[in-house]
Image (cartoon, rainbow, N blue to C red; front, side, top):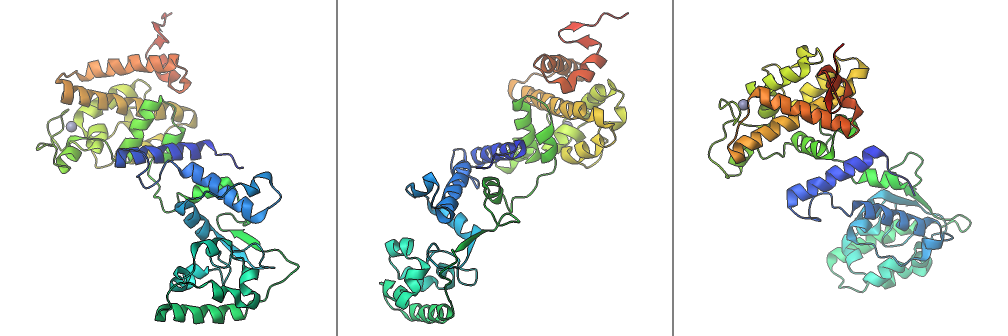
Length: 365
Ligand SMILES: [Zn+2]
C-alpha cells in the first residue's frame, strides 16, 4: 500500500479539523475522518477485483455506500472474458455501468443478484433478463430495450481477463495515495496553505493559522454576522471592523507590532502597509523579497506574530486587560526564545538578533 507524504497527512489533518469546525463533531463534515479508512477499503476493493491470489483478496467485503460510490466513479472495465466484472455494477458497457445507463431497470433487480452476477454469466443465454424481479413499468421496459441493444454487440474474449482501469493515475494502476488524493478533487486550494505546510512552529500556532487562512476565526465581524454580538469594532484600534485580515495585517496596532518584530532583522520594508491585502497574500509576496535562507525564519515569525496579536485580542476581549505594543512585543520575544529551546531552529536568527541566546542574554564583547 502506498505511503502518504507529509503534505498529504497535513492536508488530511486540516480536513479533519474542518469537519470538527463545521459540524462540531466527528463524522458529519464534507470530508469525514473515515477518509483514510475509505482509501484502504478502496485498496481492498481493487485487490479483490484484480488479484485473487493475494491473501486478503477473500476477506469479507464490508464496504459502505460511500466506498462503493467512490469505487464506481474511479474504476472502469475493459471487458475480456467477463469473469471478474460484475454485470449490473461495474462500468463495462462503453465506460458506464448498467446502474448508470438504465437506473430503472437496475432498481428492478434484487440486491443479492446485483452483487454477484458477472458479465459472462449475465450474457450467457441472456441470463441477465431473468434477474429482473421488480414491476415492469414503462421506464423499466425502455431501459430493458436499451440494455438489450447495447449487450447484443458485446463479444467476450475467453483468453483475456477483464482489465480494471483506475482513473486517478496516468498508468491506470491503482495506488492508495492516488485514491486518497481523489477524495480532495474539487476542493479549492487555499492561498497560503502550502506555506503553512512547510512553516516551522508549534502545532497550536499552525492550527490557528489554518483557521486564519480559512477565515474561521471568531472575530467581532464574524460574531456579528452570526448574530452573536452587535458591535464589530476592532478591539485593538477601535477604528475599523474587526475581520481577521484587519486584526493581523491592517490594524494600526498590529502593524506597530510587525514593525518592531521585523525591524529586529532589518526587514522593516516588509511591514504590512495600510493596504487592502489579507495575511496570506502579504505573507507570500513578502517572503519572496527575502534571501532563501531567511524565508524559514520569516515564516516562523509570521506565525508567531499573528498568534501573539490574536492572543492580545483575546486578552482584551475576554479578560478586559490590555498590553501596550512594547509589552506585546517583549512577550513575543520571550516566546521566540521558548520556541528555540523547544527545537524550532528556524527562529534562531531572530533570537540572536535580539541579543539573546536561548534562555539568557548574550554577553556583549
Ligand atoms: Zn484594529
